[in-house]
Length: 83
Image (cartoon, rainbow, N blue to C red; front, side):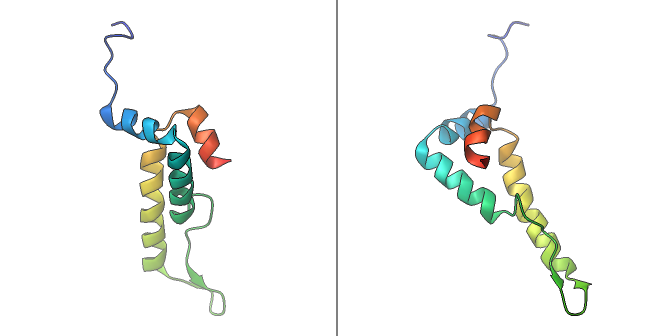
C-alpha cells in the first residue's frame, strides 16, 4: 500500500490544522497547563499527609484529555506548544 493510499484520520488532520495557527498554539498551551500536563496530579493534605483520591482521579482524567489530543499532534507542532 502506497503512502497516497493511506487515509489520514480526519480528527488528526483537524487537530494539526488548529495547532499550526498562532491562536491554536495559544489555546493548546492553555489547555496543556489547565490539564496538569507538566505538573503533579496528586491532591493531598500536607498537614495530615492524606491523599485525596477523588481529587487525584479528577486531575488525572483532565490530564488524559490533553494526552488524547497530544497523541494526534505532529512532533514539530508539539514542540511549539510544549516549549
